[in-house]
Image (cartoon, rainbow, N blue to C red; front, side, top):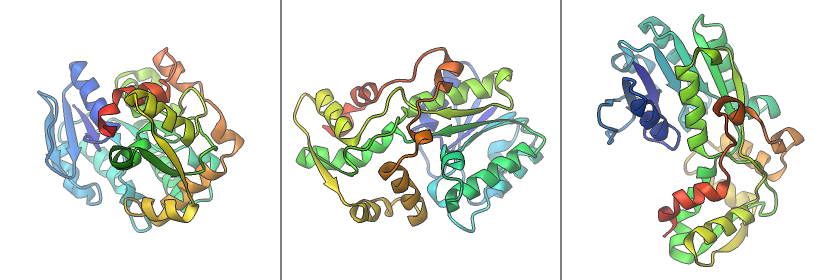
Length: 279
């Protein structure tokens, strides 16, 4: 049995589907009731209360651990989840971390994530750590404004980073859960090219077949919007990267291709597959 947390999100949903299609028994964990693929067991649980994961972890041999935004905030205890997994007999954990633990190690959310990485390394379990950069799916923040006003509103219009398709993260996670050769692996995951918000807007417009205007937000405007769905310190960390990426954050990593044997998908591919969200 493989347990997938965050199973209804942009990474967990394709990961759950891929594991089920591979013929594996899967338990999908989410905070709320949700549809899951046929044959997949679904458990409602909140990772903020690790003891509540016991029913989900029963009989599990592997765990994909993805933290929701509130578990990055001060006072959260995500390390307890690893303890619960070990106590339940889980043998392998694949942790979704972040590129920022290396590129921005002094940020409060990065310090907390690096501590969780260290807890996993010292747990005695088999492990793999995934460190993605920005997600292509963050463009869904623009879906309402594109649908209603044919406009993308974002900061730093001409500053880009090599964002990654969450489906590629899911594919790497599946490989790490299923293949012994990835035990002890740490993978930096990026897309195939640096792409700016303005060029993302162009890709969305091309997928729609209709014009979409780009409107540049100030940093303060962007933070106010982001803080509705994530802790303010995480919003600040994200904006620091988007506004002034370091050379390491601009680097296109070879790790997706190393694991999957193919290049990561470009943003235009993601936009074409998710175009209905913008109609």
